[in-house]
Image 1: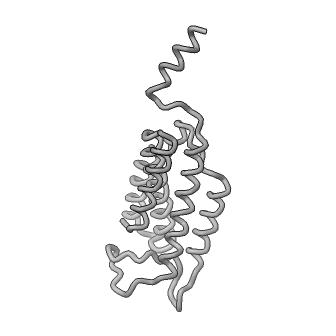
Image 2 (image 1 turned 120 degrees about the horizontal axis):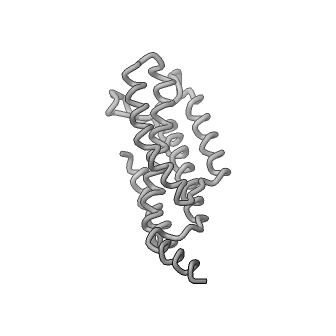
Image 3 (image 1 turned 180 degrees about the vertical axis):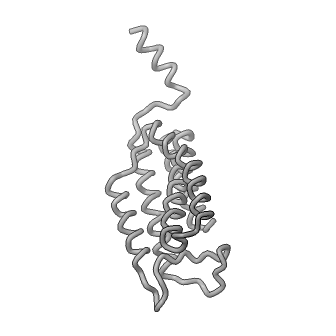
Length: 164
């Protein structure tokens, strides 16, 4: 995990958990953001770098299926990512996919775990962080706009409605 991902996740937990006083919404939003980003990144990485690798496609399908539950749970809890920030994210991904630093292909992610042995490439790292952070902001805005009560208050609210 990149330190920027960790810091962004912690900031989302603080903003949504403490400011909105919704730790449930904070945890679900953070995992939906990170999981959704990783699923999209994995599919794009496979399309871009490994289009014929069946094993990679199966792995990405399993990962996307596992992470989709968190995105669905966030949606069920009322989190609707900000359309404007989703648009920024799409543009950031498009730039990242099309950038050609030097004479290499675009969509580089500085992944030593995937065999990268050269120095850190600054432009692709910035593109990664911009895409991931704009996606995080989309979820943060969506979570902050959520009006649904926390699950521990829903039964109480339902009981009040029945008595009225």
